[in-house]
Amino acid sequence: APIMIQVTEIAFTAYPVTDMPRARAFYEGILGLQPASTFEHEGKHWIEYEIAGAALGITNMVPDWKPSPAGPSVALEVADFDAAIAALRAAGVKFLAEPYSSPVCHMAVVTDPDGNSVCVHHRDQPAH
Image (cartoon, rainbow, N blue to C red):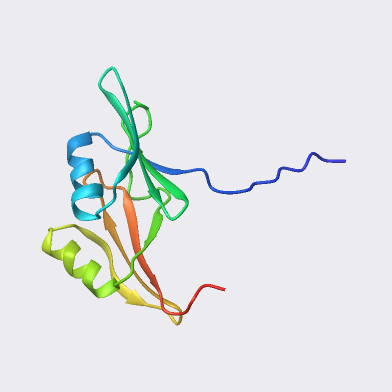
């Protein structure tokens, strides 16, 4: 019989960044995330933000891991979509996908300062 893997949760999602102070200004200053844990070794950092039982990490510890708008993207659920979009515009954040609506949600895709794609999302219906 094949060995079954039982995935119980997503431990973390992470993005590579090149300029840690600039990245933290985006994730903490603009998105309002609070660091849950930070690790520093020889000038390289891993910063982790806890979000409703999940974790989003940013790091500059992996030299060959390059930021990209074409890679996977985390979708951050926001309480007030219009207010979030207004705050991102006010901060001069670049939009890769302008805000749009589907039958069940609103979303937009922005970039962090390194060019990684970050989706801003709001469910119109409660999750089932």
